[in-house]
Length: 279
Image (tube, rainbow, N blue to C red; front, side):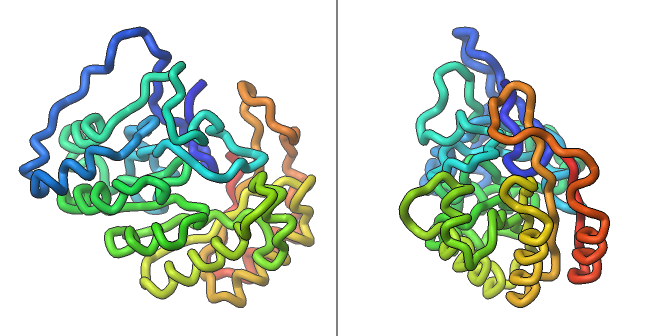
């Protein structure tokens, strides 16, 4: 199984455990930051890396680092082995050293690094890693569900673009809990708080929703769109659910009848920037 972007179509490099550690390219971190700062960035728990993609940061060629750990259990999660904070012993995980080595080799070919997951803001080393990446001359992108607004606030000063996942109506706490697999807490409130923090920081961002008619029929998709519009969102992406063959996910794939053409037309008219993505 290859780890995948939870909301987009790219897969990342991961390897079955063979008993041999991967050969990492050592990077002298002192050339980037102080020794203490580099040590903190080196604690980043990277499950896998996509070395090159044009999908995960709009308008830029990027590498994607998938960070281990997520507190939510979304029904359509493509990376369930990244949910625990500990690495899956069946896979050889990646590392900060491997990411830095990749960036050194691909100077001039890559524009950015996207931190995805899992939920990247769970990792306390993320702010240090983001600063180190920027010090190397790369833009920093972030994929987040907004589940840790207080952690997000700490990393936003070092982020150039955010893809914020909106799972359901921000006013429907029951639906949000259903999709995220939670029986307690208020994931919708966390997502709304995260959106307001991103807007206050002035960081470029998009909101995106992964949708299937079983839990988001067309009328609910339009309801989410109107909520986001009222909140000042300018960029929205609707990502149609897809079921990888290797995962036993609860919903079947859908055809081009979803969303309806009229729904797409309305979404296009609502947002200055709207994109329909089909895996």
